[in-house]
Length: 187
Image (cartoon, rainbow, N blue to C red; front, side, top):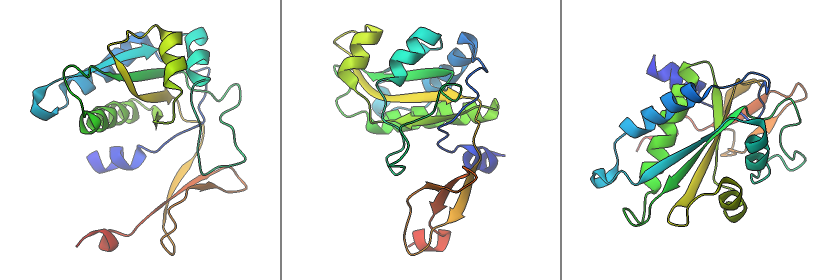
């Protein structure tokens, strides 16, 4: 079961935008992040959930989409995420929270998969603009943004060839994610 959740947890970038995600569902996903282990149990992370059309557009305008897909600027209207969770850190509690952020986001995304949703983590964010749009207090840093929705695209895991791990889309818009073989990773 866990292996299926992990395999289903792909970076989805196109969604059925009209399929709403409730505030309750977002809180359930944040609850998973809250329960996730943190280094030294500092619990420095905070979360802002967004699921209104107006705020979704603001967040969307601050993100850079799919660096390997040079000819694609992101999802079109009707394919945009239905919700976001902005992951914040209080640097007064923890200066280097990157491991905590990764664990929390993985918990959020696995929970999303379990609910029939999907998502994508964004580190490429115009943080100053987003902080202003969302009225984020100055004592919190934006770490990542998790986009969420009902996946509209098919994502397929392929075997990496010649060490090439760049994702790509085929003529049918199937998103291919090359993965190295297990025996290439185990030392």
